[in-house]
Image (cartoon, rainbow, N blue to C red):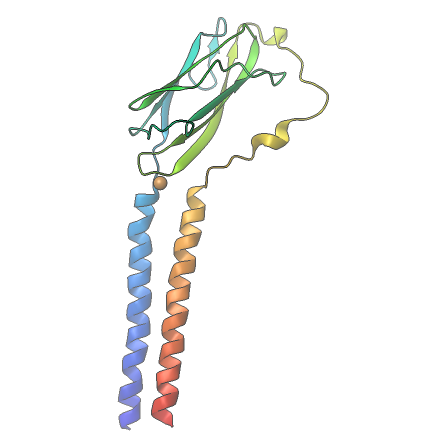
Amino acid sequence: MSTRTRSRRPRLLVILGLVLGLAGTAVAVPAVAHDELLASDPAADSEVAQLPDAVTLTYSGVLIDEPGVNAISVTDAAGTELADGSPVLDGTTVTQALTGDSQGPITVRWRVVSSDGHPVSGEFSFTAGDPAAAPTAPSETTSAETADEGLPPVFWIVVAVVVVAGVAALIVALVAASRRRTED
Ligand SMILES: [Cu+2]
């Protein structure tokens, strides 16, 4: 009978481990919330009379400023790159100078390093001038390059779940081992 009370304690340990693991995940998830794009000029899905001299993106936090980590690509319907030089970072805003006078749908793809050190990325578009005057895209589809390098928040949630599962499996294995020892 004494073995039953002894084996109940490891089981409690497993439950405690799982609860702590899950609590850790719950705490980690809000910390995973990266800075997000709050606004842009031109605004997403807006129409402007002509291609502006620059696009400005405003984020929810002060971005990390290191050479080459922040990148903004601005392309017209033909896929021509309109960004002129490197983006200029000032606290929570990034300004990318533009060149040319492209009309029609303009796509802005951005990748910046969030204040928590994680790369974040996204894209939006606006329309400049006359949509009918948009340059036609080359026949080969270039939409395959939309896969961006930034790790989505889901990745970190999956990592957290895997870590929790690993710890739980370890605890279960240790409990099983100690139980085998008590039964011998
Ligand atoms: Cu983050």
